[in-house]
Length: 256
Ligand SMILES: Cc1cc2nc3c(=O)[nH]c(=O)nc-3n(C[C@H](O)[C@H](O)[C@H](O)COP(=O)(O)OP(=O)(O)OC[C@H]3O[C@@H](n4cnc5c(N)ncnc54)[C@H](O)[C@@H]3O)c2cc1C
Ligand code: FES
Image (tube, rainbow, N blue to C red):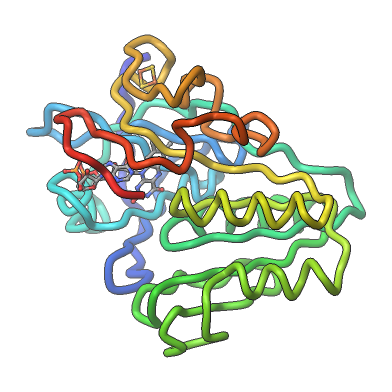
């Protein structure tokens, strides 16, 4: 698929490192958990970004390396090239069910998209949004949102697991969804399993094609861009590459 051009309609600074862009594009067939491959002139590679909304298209970008910093410097009216949406997205339960969303850092953005879809479908969602400190917290979802910070500078002191354990002990949820650092997602999935709740996990690996061709995004026997990026915990719990330090394209160890 050839890239299409989107114009930035609005830019919102979410926190100290994440910027959220609303684009002049509608992707009505997209699902939460899917991603686009984004590109800017002057860069060799495209990079994947999870959908934080699809009608209109929204992405939340954490400034990390050269590409993401260049994206974060863009202003309304400027352009982003994109392909997609791609990948296996989250699966939502039926109307009347209850779901728990547990996100860390910019990983909370695709969960906000789930919360918005859940509201329309009559699914009751509760969200937990965690960060190291106040300046790294994302904006709330359109459902009840509990904030946690490791240093106690905002919301509950502690990590998302403390809040999730408290909720799972008190209430019955039909599904848990998680997105964020891989160690956090593994811990959330084990907690959900302990409380006999199915968990969907949104994974990340270094991607190049985004369509299952190049093999850059393999995680054990899984091709993340094609088989995922959403996986059920049951599909990942025996994958020895999940929750491990992995190497990026240049061979650098990437700590998740
Ligand atoms: C399916 C998917 C969805 C994603 N969604 C988002 C999103 O919604 N918002 C967002 O900000 N980013 C997202 N990412 C990560 C994003 O694609 C880029 O990897 C990130 O923006 C860094 O790119 P860069 O070129 O700026 O930095 P680089 O120069 O490539 O790297 C900067 C630093 O980040 C590390 N790094 C690079 N890629 C990853 C990665 N995938 N995971 C962990 N560490 C990495 C590098 O090793 C290096 O230390 C997603 C990745 C995947 C695979
Ligand atoms: S990025 Fe090429 S196979 Fe996944």
